[in-house]
Length: 361
Image (cartoon, rainbow, N blue to C red; front, side, top):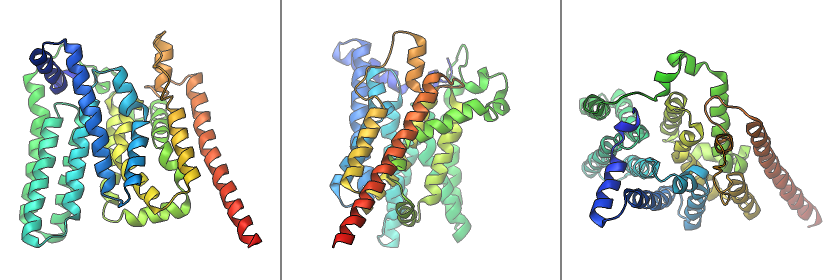
């Protein structure tokens, strides 16, 4: 069944582990999932450290990602998903992309490092296309960066490298679809009667995507103020276009990808990690951080079991799922707004207390 048949790496790894260890295939999937989740959290810490010298900030960001429903909790519930490996691969690719663009060595040394990082990004895309298609995003950003640099410098080798990157990634996408035979397709583009136009103009589906993005970005939105947003914008200089393109690709793939909107929008984790790290690094009151962590954990029902009593309860767990809007969707939307309002009230109280102390002094 497409597109699952084109993601053979996780089940192949699980099968290899089960045969090697003499255990069940389920145990093999469990090992793959646990290794992927541990790698993911370590790599989140590593990515955050690229934007802060304070270790506690990187730890805090790692905890926030760990408290997100679909980064850890859901994958421990459903160990057969490929996302645990996909998250790690994307983080490796994005770490290489960022290191490539912030290296400050001599020109010859810099060129060698760029080639090294480019090879890592390309390897992530080729291998990752057999895990989940989102893994091609770092390579897409690399191709865009190469084309932008070519436009500015007119160096032909940049254009040649961009063409090679696009060609290799396209081949990694196309070849499995020619080799692997499927009986049917579950792709939203194939099963939706309206086709591409019907999907992009479906207001219910699109509203669920917007709500899903707001839910996932709860930790960042809760901490943002106009002043912090201004400082964040300044520190993102050189990465704004790349992160914007990354976000657009994720939203586009979410729109046409399938019904599990809540699981797809979490691929915005790279912009979330970077922006949240910078906001925390610039300074946030400790009460705001406690509130943000509590809001993230409670809203994501991190200690509650995934409901399995019936299909309706299971779909309500997603909050946003395809075109479905239920009473639970509306209630969770109100709850989200309440968490934001609570943070604004807390910030107002902290500001009032600060002004009161200043007046006394």
